[in-house]
Length: 436
Image (cartoon, rainbow, N blue to C red; front, top):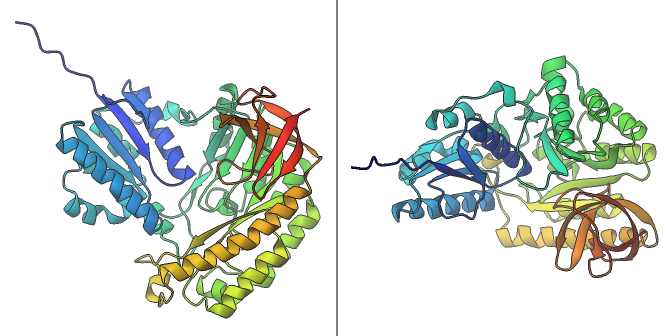
């Protein structure tokens, strides 16, 4: 009689939510493969017998999307298409007990810092020698780098500390090693991310040490661009702008979530600042680097935002003329400070306010983009799509900002390469260009 051969496990990792989750999935993928386990990220293959879903629990829409994805794979399990479904990430961290009751078909739930426990399910060990090494799930020419985990801020609307815990910085030497490893693999752009990047170093070095981290990453050979995300405005370390100014490979780009333009709402949000202080900070940064692109995010419909406060935010946007802007509608999250406040506005009213802000921003963005026509910019080519090579300038981050479109029927560009692109035409959010 023939011995029955055991089919080897094939693992598919599905990522929901933000770039921070993507990094966690990439670390998990690296550890599984480092242990000799056949694993892939968002594979379309139908022979994966184990699925790991890395969930998002940030706001209602994201939670619903994560739950729908879990139910989709639980259904696949019941139909015999997969053998095991594991769930990890923010939603699982925050609602583990509820999820275990509601969706018992899931084989195991893990929190945001349970990587060793996930590996144990595969009889695998956490390999410390792989720290700093990470398999990317996208083109290698750019890579997200998570410089810290968790957050110590008390913002009223935010559930991140409930899911990610307190702030923990990664040591500079570990991050430099990771940057060197990425550069050797062909990465040209590092996108620094954290829940709060300006808090970096306070726990390890007893001071805000983001400027020193930027200096040391800037010294890594092969890294052409370093881009800073999620810089909290209160207590902003201005030495970061000094380093940005002196180092040519640190992009003149700053993602600084301001969240509102009314002092009263900022107080209700527990942001530790005022509209005047925020404006003063932006003016100081622009005075030091006039060409900088500032990206911010705002929340429409937070408790305490009446017509007057909303109008203050509209005026704020019109006055500050942010190069990039994203707007979220307020989500009433249990166990947050704001959950005890009255959530008066309907979702429709919040969405109307968000849409109004984006209409104001569209005109600002259009006017700023018109000023770029005729100018030439160093542009990194990300992909080819819809008859165009699609790239970004140093003033634009991946997936959230403006894109540079180069007609692929007329000119050839290689994905992952830099080109000099001359802007010939501009819309609200796109620049059309030719390679010179």
